[in-house]
Each structure stands twice: as structure tokens, then as C-alpha cells.
Image (cartoon, rainbow, N blue to C red; front, side, top):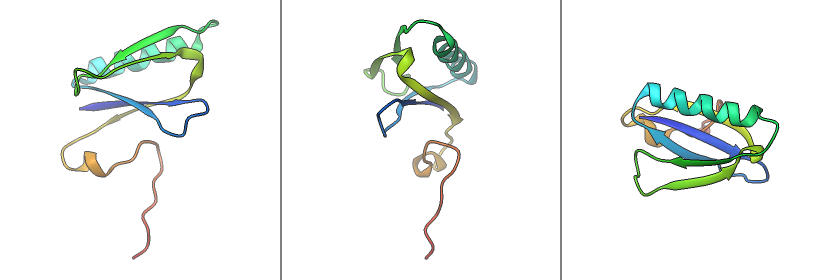
Amino acid sequence: MYSLDLTLKYSPIPVSVQRKEADAAQALYQSVLEAMKGDYATLLELTCEKDEDKKIALLSDQISAVVLNKKSGAAAGGRVPGFFATQAAE
């Protein structure tokens, strides 16, 4: 399972959608990047393959970051989106 996390301007919580296949996740990542590079805001409608009823619509000019990562098995539940996470000292 692959997760695409979108960070929106003025929102501390990322929006996430999942893809089952690596190729589908990479294609979605590229389409979001192209929308972000565009001169005009476009409406993006995203769906989630993990939760079929989950649908998200957002404007491309409101996206400040996009992260594509692989979620695997038990490790998926404990991972946080982003590049850096710290663990509290015990």
C-alpha cells in the first residue's frame, strides 16, 4: 500500500489517499506535481483505494507539499507522514 500525503496551506493536518500499486501511486504523484506547477489553480478530485468511499476535492494552488511513501504491514500504523520523526527518551 502506498500513501500520498498532501500538506495544504493554513492546515496543520495532511490529507492522505492510498494506492495499492506502485505505478498508480507514482502516476498520481506526478499528476499532483503537474497541477502544482500550473499557472492557474485547478480542482483536483482524489479518491482512496483503501477506503472506497473517501473522496477529496481541493484546489491545486493550496497544496504546499506532497509526500509519497510506502506503507508496509505492522510498520504502517506507527509511521508518521513526513521525512523526520523523533522518539521520546524513556
